[in-house]
Image 1: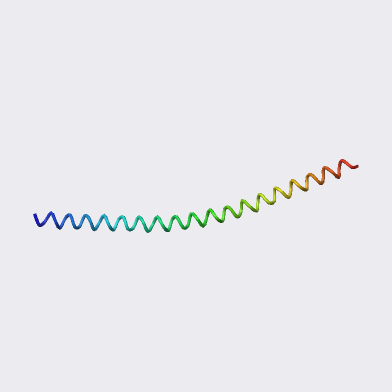
Image 2: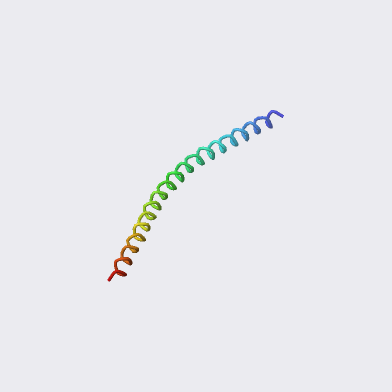
Length: 68
């Protein structure tokens, strides 16, 4: 009976180690993903601003061409 208790304790410790490693890994992965998403949002904002400026310029060019 004593051997079973030792095996159970070893199994519980192994499980705790596995869960601890998974939690730590998940946290670090989440932080990296959050950082990458923020950087991507910055790039998308820059792109959207450029598109808006191009649309305004196209409108001005069309207005100037219409006055000729």
